[in-house]
Image: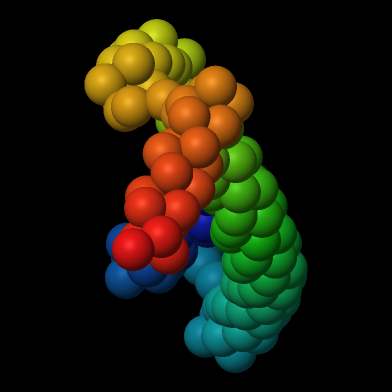
Length: 145
């Protein structure tokens, strides 16, 4: 950038000096063909500098574009892996919540099963034997007139 500004400054200075092509002591004059040749050489040098700067800008632009592309790819891969990790963490939290719910509800479920077990009538072996004996006695009564 500094080179570009210095070249532009020189062009502006030289264009002002070309209008009065006179030396300081007013005794030496520059011929028009010599002046035109020098200006042509100077302009060719400026064009060469512009071409060099343009090539450098092109290469710098390519490097920036490549770095931008690489950075986008890295950000995308980090974003993808971060989404996977968050998904795994979310799933683990869900499992933890389910496990805590089971642990908290286990005593309540045990009490419900225990109350159902206590409220339901239990039949023992003696009850079965007694019912069979009563049934047999009823059958004997019906068979004997």
